[in-house]
Amino acid sequence: MRRTLLPVVLVAPLLLAAAPASATAPTGPARVTAVLETPALYDDEAGGDADVDDPAIWIHPTDPARTRVIVTAKNGGLYVYDLRGHQTQHFATPAAPGPDDESGRFNNVDLVSGFRLAGRTVDLAVVTDRGRDKLRFYRIDDGTLTDVTAASAPFAFNRTQAEVNEQATAYGLATYRTGDDWYAVASRRHTPELGMFRLIAVDGKVTYRRTDSLTLPASFRLPNGTTWTPCLEPGEGPQVEGMTVDPVLGTLYAAQEDVALWRVQVVAGRFGLWPSQVERVREFGVPATYDPETEECDLDWAADPGYGGRIAADVEGVTIYRTGLLTGTLIVSSQGDDTFYTYDRLTNRKLTQFAVVDGAVDGSQECDGAAVVSTPLPGFPGGLLVVQDGHETPDSDRTATNVKFLDAGFLRR
Image (cartoon, rainbow, N blue to C red; front, side, top):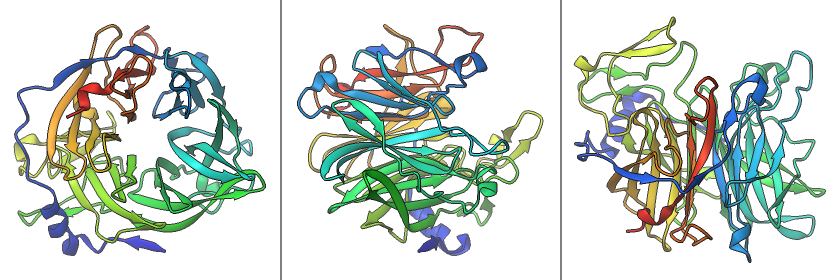
């Protein structure tokens, strides 16, 4: 089933009413520091075009010291680290199926726990391969990963390889469970489209089938009677990347990068009909013009109508620090100002702002993905927060990224 929200002239008043008006920022973000970091990966030919993007945290069921952090690195593949930040495994991306086709490019990662596969219960790491428009699956055995992607796994959004080569492909990712069934929500690059996929075990491998679709709005009728469309490169739509699902509340949080953080109900492989906004970006409603020379948008802040929120675009990594059945903190990366905003998990009430600054290791800038657990772990008694650093600084002559490990106790309220 494909669902597209009603024309913006009808639905925008409802959507805008769901999000509070622009709020006054606090006096300044809290400053927190990382305990350690992973080695730098380099986004150049010598470094294998490795660009760290998104982390996930797998907790060992009996020995917390053997917990693993799993990280996507785009063309660099999939990296696995222990709690000291040491690499334990690496998976390369799949080769292109033909000489003129796109090779694999790993974008986001999430986890599945208690999946029935080949007669036993296993945990999985699930990855969006945006180069090949597929979901990929890695069985986790005692902290060691094994690729169990079915060779017959279909394209997520496209029908032909020629369409895949255009790269409007699987991008962001979140997983959740309903009863005995597991689902993955994937976003589609350069579009506001989301797809829902049921995970299926076949002959010891894992594949999937789409069960629903949802397209978020791409333009918005503002209270002043004008229509606003986020400024993007011509031909692109406002995409979603960062996502997470609150499994108890059945709520998907989806970060539409240039628009807002949304909440969408998800039930048994279906999307709820009416998404609502948790908070908009500061740039919401601000007129802008795309400059093809700089490939950036020039914003006319003097004409800001005042409908934006606190988040500085892009809205990026989204994760939940769960402290009880219904308690905890929702965290979102405000990439444009190198900070993070937090919200009450149950009510989405605005809480605090923090920044990961230089300490024992350098801080985090332009953070893409983030993951957090509240389980006490060796070296991280308050739980573990992992954030991507878009500007790792061992060598200023090369584009470098990595992830930082923080004790998450500061998030507890």
